[in-house]
Length: 233
Image (cartoon, rainbow, N blue to C red):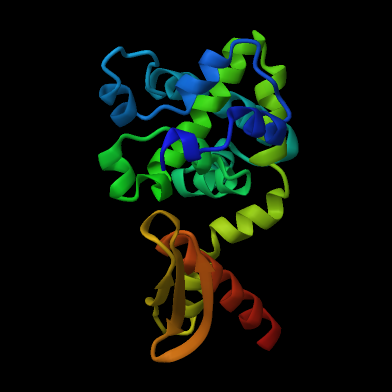
């Protein structure tokens, strides 16, 4: 995707509900190393330093939220919950809700190899945007609002979704069975594929799901299987 084909960053600002005083910070947060290296004048830094900062802000905000949300839980359980909510696939999933991938500035090679749909890149950019908001606003208020709105909202639903594969695995293993997944279809161009995956208990079909990545499609399939699993008990 060329820069001329990308929506203006003002569209992203509207989506996240925050308008940058220094838009350079936002543009850096959206710039992948491959793009920065292609620009001979090096007008923009890549997102890496901002991602480092945003990761720390995200950890602080999510830790404080969970500390108050679950006053009776021990630190080990809180760490497990936090890991589910802010791990790479979880962040990428949340970022896709605001179509953050549309705004990432990638080098030609990275673009051609599907970098725009790469969970690692999308989650890193999400953290970089958080870091940019922190620097731009000079406080935790703006990034905290973003995190609460787009990452920590619908906590129970997201935890069920992110843990669906492991939860389904545990339920099936209790019966002595095993779970496996199969990619059953994919459609769309390389930069915007939609995958379909099916989940099986041994040789028995349970459900199928769709997603922007294979892993996401498997999670959707596992969640559907869990829901039907519970209604059949």
